[in-house]
Length: 74
Image (cartoon, rainbow, N blue to C red):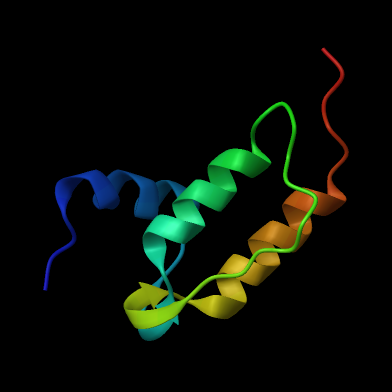
């Protein structure tokens, strides 16, 4: 099964593996976009487990690392 064209770029950019059961890719995309925004979310992420989703451990590690990195002061 191939990813839709829009998912190929983002999946490659984020570096998450697509696994048999994992986090819903659209929900992860939306949350990661919010993390990169001016006002990141304060609530913990809650993703549905779906077939052909992102690897949970990789997503959790990325979110933890992103939250631990202080925002840039430009």
